[in-house]
Image: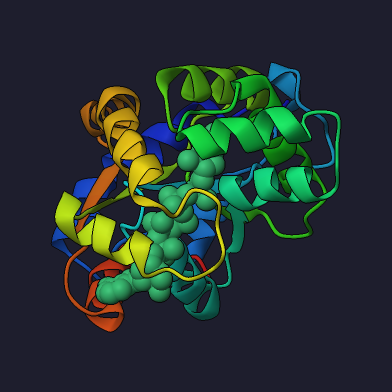
Length: 237
Ligand SMILES: Nc1ncnc2c1ncn2[C@@H]1O[C@H](COP(=O)(O)OP(=O)(O)O)[C@@H](O)[C@H]1O
Ligand SMILES: Nc1ccn([C@H]2C[C@H](O)[C@@H](COP(=O)(O)OP(=O)(O)O)O2)c(=O)n1
Ligand SMILES: [Mg+2]
């Protein structure tokens, strides 16, 4: 789908340690985004359409992904794509996969990647923006591999909200959004699935130098002050 100029991912990842260590004096928008064009020589189109800047937002259930995404959107103008919200919309619109998705979510399991990646791809393609927060995805290596195959690119960066299990359970049980999966049995299963299937994805991106591990404890504002420098250094507004 999108092809990346060869130097781009190395530009972003090699800059990561600078971004972390020298917050506020890292890349500017120009450096990042003027390089992000399709390369006709590599089979891309010639209209210089930009490759999207993608941040995956990961963390266990209740770790604060959605809450922090809202703050990042307000401050830095990225578009929030929540995999869970897309799947819940499929349930409420009675789509052909609706009942399968509902049962999977109730059981605390992961919906097949084919379904989720298709929804994410559509959300990216129909957006006017070219900077995205993809929240709650990928939740497994299968998710990750399917995304990278279908979209043809890796994410630029990955945020991981690290939060103790006890705190995550407390938050989920107090979430009060009428979600079918916000109950003790489902959350226990979700924590198991997170450890078994999502932690390997987090490790993968850590090895690639793309991971920003954020302490997910404290108030929402305190956590956002840990997130802010990541995007401020990239000047992604
Ligand atoms: N730092 C925080 N301290 C206490 N409660 C929080 C905090 N961040 C989020 N919450 C609340 O915890 C619940 C889960 O947060 P949410 O952002 O939905 O997490 P996730 O998307 O990772 O499941 C929500 O009710 C939210 O309002
Ligand atoms: N990549 C994804 C994301 C969510 N799902 C399903 C399974 C998850 O338990 C539910 C809810 O996901 P959501 O990201 O909204 O959940 P939290 O915000 O972490 O509580 O959706 C999925 O199957 N695959
Ligand atoms: Mg969420």
